[in-house]
Image (cartoon, rainbow, N blue to C red; front, side):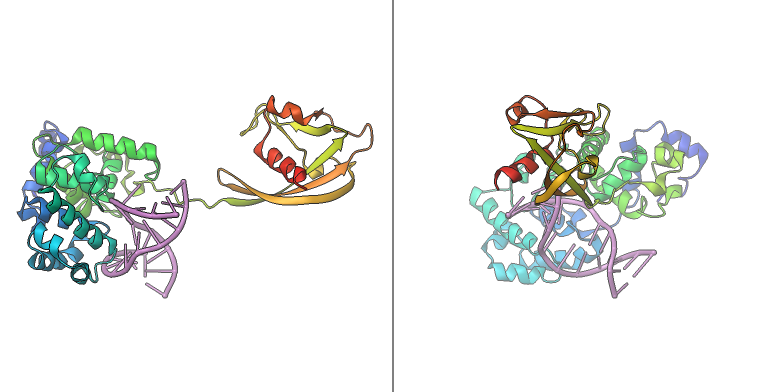
Amino acid sequence: MPGWATGERQATEDDDLSYAARLLAWFDAGHRDLPWRRTRDPYRIWVSEIMLQQTRAAAAIPYYEEFLRRFPTVEALAGAPEAEVLAAWSGLGYYSRARNLRAGAALVVERGGFPSDLEAIRALPGIGPYTAAAVASIAFGLPHAVLDGNVIRVISRVSNDPGDIRAPATRKRFQAAADEWLHRVRPGAFNQAMMELGATVCLPRAPLCLVCPVNSTCEARMAGTQNQLPVKLGKVKPEAVESRVVIVRRGQWIFLRQRDADARRMAGFWELPGLEDIPALIDTSVVGNFQHTIVNQCYSVTVYRGAMPRGSAPAGGKWMKPELFTDVPITTVTRKALELLRKR
DNA sequence: AAGGCGGGGCG
DNA sequence: CGCCCAGCCTT
């Protein structure tokens, strides 16, 4: 870590360099000496990246060393019994990683070599978008930016982006940023530098902004929002809502009401009235009950049947024939309720 | 779109 | 001691 990173004069000089150049200069000046950074052998890079899925570097190192002692080549791994591979993985967790790795090794040997483009790498078992980009860039020098938890954190802060990281739109935006910032000559080093920054400086809580190589252009730091990023919205479990609707028939006609034109959802749709909307209701009985989930509300709908004395129909309602329901918008709850009655 | 996989770190 | 953790595959 350069000792002058906080100096104003240096920060001014930093601004003349691209983001990638500043990041790489910092990376080159002293990154962690991890064993998989001493090779460009695709097999070894692959093994390391699989081990690093959901696993910190410190935990993976001893396993990495021992695994490669036992299976020094892709041929050795492909020819090993699965039980022996699992034994070498024992304690690392997520054992499908080991099974997929061995199966992938067999495929590589069968095809006579390691795939050398993103899509072919991605097609190996256990390799998803992150690992494919990591292997492609680190082992083959291909220009594909990785997006893992570390990179997401760095990008959300550098661009001060408050988007929910679970949202596909946010992921696309972050991937686009990573691809744009990617160093075209040293994509592998750039990717590792992004992850190194996230792992050692741009920490989840209390990031070390004072020693960050890109602090002079970090928008979150300028706005003071670095501790609130990245934004990850909790998954909201559907809220349970009780609802009671009533079917009032008069011959072929069914009484429906229309939703407000400015309702938040299903504006202008026709639906059955709620039980409480028809005070004059007589001869009520329960038809049945069903569940209906809209966005994050889980409705438990109880369907009633009843009758209205002549002249007691609430204003704003309308008697409609079921044949007409194909021509006007009807809410799904109403369709389900009428279906419930029809089946009885 | 959601759930399962496993171990470690953290409050 | 719960709670969290963003990679991949399956349903």
